[in-house]
Length: 78
Image (cartoon, rainbow, N blue to C red; front, side, top):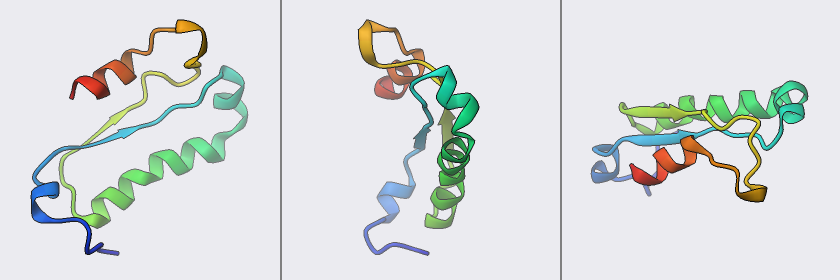
């Protein structure tokens, strides 16, 4: 599963996995989507990352309407 595009200098950095669904309805009823998003951590590990931060603070928060998304802001700041 190793990719030739992932270089050692990439792996030295922390990987950030941003997990989000736009509405409470999606969080409750689209569980497969959430599971697939969280499973991305396994893919990052398989590619060689050891430092992985999962940010899922914004589950159920839409990006529409100027809603604050603390997780997104934290990801961008990183």
